[in-house]
Image 1: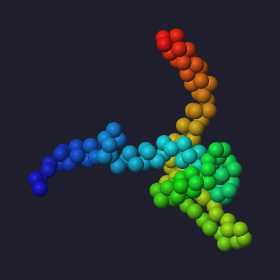
Image 2: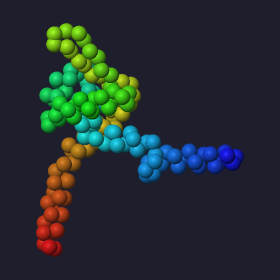
Image 3: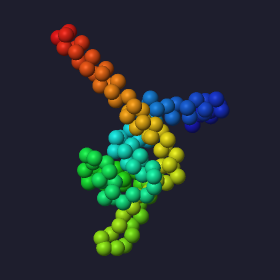
Length: 136
């Protein structure tokens, strides 16, 4: 194996974490956090621990399967913790970890931006569709 200079090692390290490259490890996280269910779950957990059933009621449209899969993925990635309280029925709570809390400002900002700009997006879509219809 040839010896590398410090500059070559730094350049190699920069290339390894270039999210535009398909092999970049950071793409795994970008794929995860760009998922709509992840964003909604993290926002739903912003105010503290929530029960599984409460999350299901809060997040309209999420199936049990998607909620379970997404929570497991977030737990695996260290973003949420799962606590089981033995009772009848069993109580399962989810809570953000410090890592999940550190991501919260970003996903909250995206949610707030979407809520503030959806009308402008709808207007732009209508204009685009009208122009596309005229050119057909």
